[in-house]
Length: 348
Image (tube, rainbow, N blue to C red; front, side, top):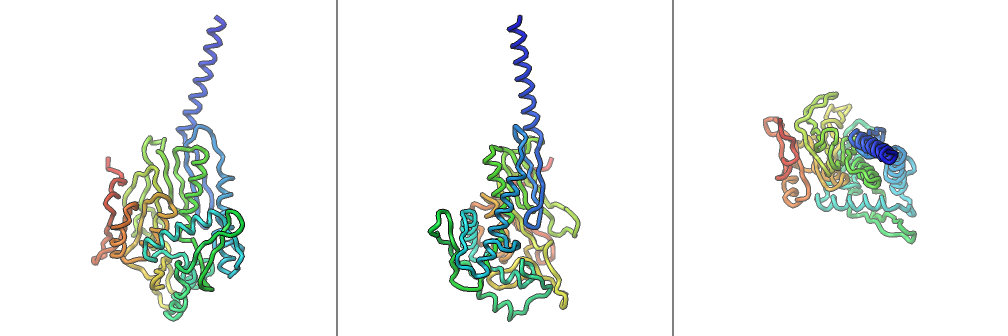
């Protein structure tokens, strides 16, 4: 009888523990905070309570001190100031090389050396004006644009590198892929902790893994309507993602009005022309193997003419893309790559 009682107690304890694990695993753990001028959110499911905020804060600090042009004394700001002996680490090298990949594959429409022009339009860390720069000013700054003029080379210090530039006065910035980069770092953190189901988002750029156990299905992600009014949140469609990264870009929220002429100008600068003018393309969403690449390609497709995007996407088979644009009648249109529809949530 004593053996039976002990066995029963053990079975009860095991059952309680299993129920506890199941409860923890099926209930989301959520973390939110501020990062690089925007917000981040993490939703995850795990078999035990996790504490990730301290690790996330360390990632944000690493990024800010290394690659943010908005942080005084950061490594990238020291490079832009002309210091010759600035050493950077593996994370900087990884982002630099991924930026090179997007630069090459988009024929230069994504270019991290466009910073001087971005500042001239007032959208960068060193830009404050509310005026469209003159054509003469734009032409004078275009000489400092060209990612091919920069390279990253090993130093004598292990796992350290330095940036080599063929021209003085260039301004390197990763702001066009910064949110995507942070998302990738945060998702790797969760991978290292053994988390199999999560959604990580920074300012709208995101990575999904596994499923949303609350709904026992893929993660539902809304695509913003580019014609929505300020303060609205309207979706044109909803996607279902699992184990994908996605980033979006659009000029419908981030633009300025020239204080003298009243002319509108947008935050996306065309590196080839130096112009920041509204175009027929209103918004782009890109699904890619990681969020850094998705963010970079989304920026490029916003900068280039629609026809150029169509041309390049014929050879970029590893991307799934939706481009939202206005036709000649001013109506909102959608153009997608062949496999994009598989992500669209079915009605019912």
